[in-house]
Image (cartoon, rainbow, N blue to C red; front, side, top):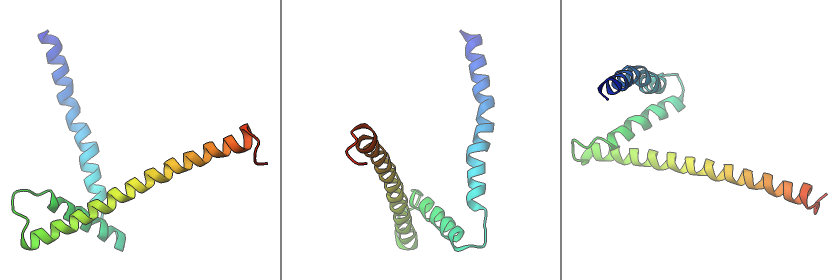
Length: 110
């Protein structure tokens, strides 16, 4: 039992660093890659205000509260866009199935 636990633990420990570097560092570097455009400024501003919203060490009053409020709005916009994309994908699948049923299978529409 102990040798198997040692092997599993050592391989798990060796895989943490590459996965952390690939997932966390690369995404952070890509987010902070500053291009000279308004969309990158909005992205960085949204990331910072969203991180301020999840900063629970200080009470959200004053400037920190207003910044956290902006972060909430960015989160709501992102979740709304994600939900909208999901609905569009489902409607697209429905249109494809209805097209198959009405044109090919039933032959109602020629």
